Image (cartoon, rainbow, N blue to C red; front, side):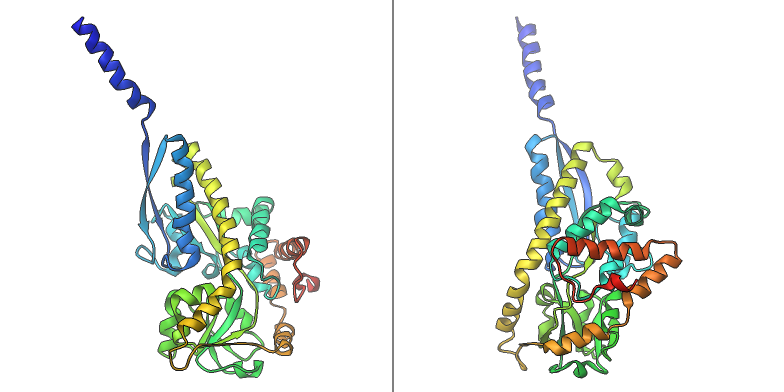
Length: 359
């Protein structure tokens, strides 16, 4: 009887362990920018949290996230290589600063004033990632898999001195990330390469006189403290990169975890686009509130409509120049610009300039 009882007890103890065993998978997630930047913070609050939630429903796997946000592993100029080489498993790839390696990803940055609707733009880019083999290959050739897409809210000008007309930009040094400096061509302003983590110091030290930037980045970075004059230009939004995972790390994951991440990536992208749209206007009100007591206080003005149109019309054919360069590299530059612009128009957008018409 003793031996039988012992056997039954052993089975009873072993069974729940087998039925409810859970495998823990360790993954590093990182970014060059801090969690205070909305789309980075949402990697944790939305992508990671949603992955965890989906996996918890079945209970077979759990991810132990090793977080390295805010540039603790690498800076903004190494976001692509750091995911590619496995410095991190999951990371935000900042495509603005990867024009040479991710050329097709720059299409929206060479078509300003086309849309100010982040959810629509991100959906168009997802559609292109699914349907355009050249665009898909552009990302996958660097040993990574795209899980979610990121974009921007609309761009405006933030300066140390007030801007009353387009002529006031002449001679100014304005910080802008990578290829977005091309948006200043024809205005007389000079682009200074940089990114949100460096903008504050650049303005403070005189490297630049202000920035071409976005409200949801300017607010947490507190750039309004050193560039209190905000000129609403409504240049539009841009595709800025992707949350991606190293392909070797991806291939080593169980299918259940992979599917959870795919779902979480879609959830992240949709939530991020909606967040950009909803919080954009509120960010200006918050900057006025926070900057009311500083000297000079934060002020927000609209660039006159005529000056805005003058800016739009005065830009050289940057989309055509970019497309021609892409074609010379064997890439479908012209077709990609057309597909992007057609995608926007198909979803109801009305670009201030139809960049594809001149191709």
